[in-house]
Length: 524
Image 1 (tube, helix red, strand yellow):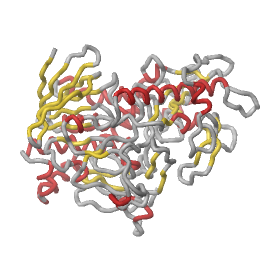
Image 2 (tube, helix red, strand yellow):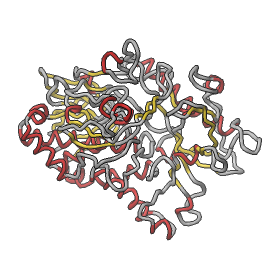
Image 3 (cartoon, rainbow, N blue to C red):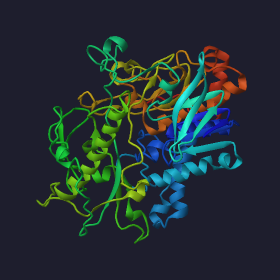
Image 4 (tube, helix red, strand yellow):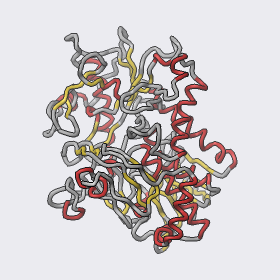
């Protein structure tokens, strides 16, 4: 069965950037259809089960107003609905999980609830339609414009043709780009192409991408046994060691990303070693009335379950499925190793009290609904952000390149995880940066915009543009730009190319609470 739906803006992909794009466009009065492959909107924040990775100044400035509303909403959700202790309730900067990765570690289900609340006025009014469990299957184009995108319901198999003046690709892998014939790049560029100090020597490698991860949630109940069945690929992963890694992947040994020196972790706090359980802890039971939670809980997104044996983009469906299954098996094998063989400080082996928590991630198998994808297809853009624009070593003046067409800001180290070509971490200092409008505009297509990791960046600069608040800002800018172009009957290219229109659009963003420039800041 084929249906047809029409809107002013269609957003394909309901991840962090997709939600921000839909919210921005709806706030500006546009009729929006938002599709999402999984059951949960939110992407990194929800279906991929990754607590926000944020910069050091996030509590004061350095994000959009709507992202701050999301963060405030998370804290408000716990205050309204949970029996917090008096100390936790009084803490204006409450970190529900007390995790070390972020000042705001929380359950994916909380993020989902807050996002749904933020979008609710537009959903209830009929201005925003959200279609979950839909994937993009094909696109129709005319010249340099995308006419429609056909999506398929994963529940029923029914197809729906979505038509709109503007299409926003907010999929995790940039899936609309090949369907619509949009020019794009994948993998690692060569130094001869970009001039970046950390780009590849020799030829570019389109299949050299950052590894991805199937995250999972677990808690710990000592004295009890929650050991899972031995995973089918456990013997492989138990013995696997990459050439560039200092030990077997299933061990307490990893590398310090910035120096590549070996480092030894531990599971729980107690020694001078870094606690991986604490790293992305999303529930700190001491913040809640006694008995609310039996245990602290954490999300496992560690070096031990990064999967780098092959990409899931630009490969056959058979190969894609093989790598996805391999990544699931790696995560389950890590859990089984932790439960049965992991060395303990007391000389014993295994923590059988580690309990997989499928309820936290909303799945049957206990793994996140969708893998944490760090690197996407990227549009060939009017302007591409290079390492030379944001890398601290490339900017002796101590400031990132200033972009006249800024549509937002972000800050994070250039952080690339081990790659599918067998290369180790690239983790280098960067400067707080801007998001140039030119990086959101394809070199040819007039009415498709990227809303997440698929903007005009390189393999290198993707490493600092891929995190939660930056992706939100990219999506928000894309949604606002589409709305502005509809109102003004202009193309995105025309907005950027006209100083008066660019200034007017930037003024709109500022009114909506988008910060366009940093104060003088230091590198991170």
